[in-house]
Length: 419
Image 1 (cartoon, helix red, strand yellow):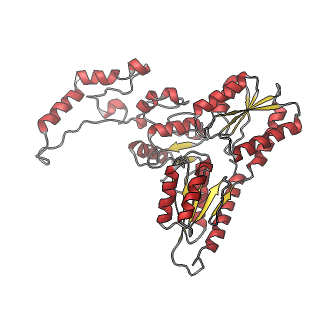
Image 2 (cartoon, rainbow, N blue to C red):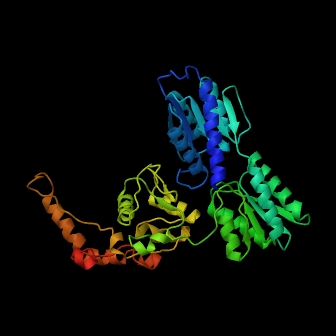
Image 3 (cartoon, rainbow, N blue to C red):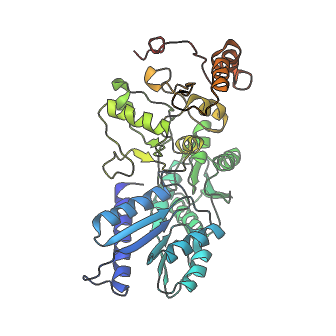
């Protein structure tokens, strides 16, 4: 998504909230309590796409509009979970609630009936009520333009379109794209394959492959993953993005060290766990060493730095980075164990700054007399002994072709390059 589009969305969001706040009882200048505005997202705020952009608007709103307090819940499935989250926000006193996915429509209507004094804004839906409105951008205009490009690029006059769900916004986009194609190439045909998914890299990639096999030489899409574009790239064909957050496809990298000579290579998005885990703390220390300051939920973070937040596990982060062609940092074991389900390559490994050392530490019995000292000593001797060290050094080789861990008992920090 380009800066102009994002700015327009921020402006529309601010304008919507201003209108709603003006309409709220007791919302004059003398109001003491802040207006509480809530958002529910269908994906994680770190997806660098749909939910991420909505959350940038939320942050902008809270920063620039006095008297407004915001909150959000991410990765809320469409259906019963959405209704539960909407209800909880309403009960907690939030007077304006943004439901940011088409599939939240029925949940919004149901909850709005129970809370007539709460205003609901639903993205891309078509059902309204006294306290329910809808909003959406003129995305069809961009799709029309991308159709013109596709119509000019095709040699076979067959263009493939991998579509998500047969809902108004997607159908409208396909129609606009096709009209753009026909405006410059009346002989070209657009073939559509439905996946009924927003985020399923494998099925979306396979749909694109089927279109390529059918003779299409340009692929368009309406999904949150680059799967169709990757399929086109692998075949040497063109991928014409028909989505909001357009990105070119390059090989993403996995790990990053504190070496200053690599700093300039991080020109794409970097995903951070942002959850105060050990990996998160290590990552932040590496940025600090090369003069880059980052902090959790900070508006001063670099634009390319995106945090997953609490609840974003290491595998979740790997999958997001893979789908968004981004960088991240991970432990070796998680990467190797899931290498076949992500499209990531290692950029840097083996640097002492990236070591993640596991220790066996016996508790001091003088300070903690009730501990099982004998059992602790036995366990410690076992873990550092020959049998366990050999097992650790071999673990994973039979399945992944390489060990997931290194057995380093008895070594000093200097042996590991830490001094």
